[in-house]
Image (tube, rainbow, N blue to C red):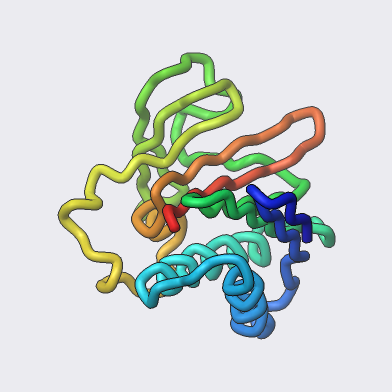
Length: 175
């Protein structure tokens, strides 16, 4: 944990077993509570985000050192899930590295899991939420993939570093 007065960083190794998710989330929320006040709505949104990021790591990462890095720089909380492994692969023609930048695409991770994204770099994209106004986060179950992170956050991006084979999921939430 690093606290330089204007910014606090907390790094926590991600558990490698689903049975540890609940206690891990409580640990993260306890750490956050030392530096900021969490409303009930904000705590629920952060829980949903954490469940999905951790579940994604357990399911798809073989990196024993996968971690969550939380940065509090008021009024923003940034949650980064960082692991070493294979990049995201879509079930479509478009793949990373993207050929065209500043483009909006519809991609899918499976037949029923479609997302709109904005390509911001050859190895980076932002998840778009075209339906946020029509839906309430209170109606989603806790396991709803990347879409729930998109709805629960203010910003959700993914970046892949091909040299380091590093995946970084970047989620920002207004405190």
